Length: 206
Image (cartoon, rainbow, N blue to C red):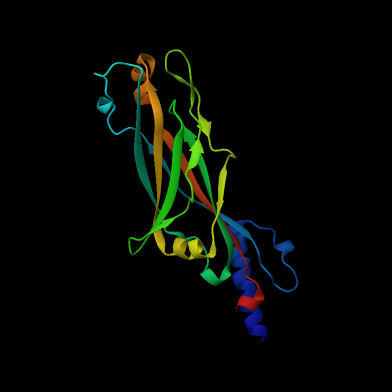
């Protein structure tokens, strides 16, 4: 029994050295309940080819389109076994540098290439502010910022069996004016994706 407890304490101290948590906060029952965070990745979505913009069309024409990008990750190397995970949430820092509203939705793709939706409805991000020359003066972000998305138990299971997250952005009703056409190659959607988890390494789980 003593040897088992020493082994448990050694594992706990090793984990603490990786997370930077104060060892004095560990209770006498050797309970370890940290909150862990890890980045999944960053991406930038832009109109594929600026030359595809209908420049031959008269200005003051409204257009819209969809763009998507994929973040690859290995969550199993960053977090514990499923039995130790109490809760998880995803955090998104989405920045809109288009002078038009965008709608963003996200889903996992698991190892069997199945889609696991994360958003029941798209996340709306307002249009960026631009000046009279079409230059972005203020990008817009998700509200609230950062955007946090708690995961259900089913989504956590899917997350641990996934290696990709897809973010799809739909640019809505962009009004093409000459200043916007002139500055079009400067517009983009960017996102940083991270995950937070509450972990319980209590003695009862060994």
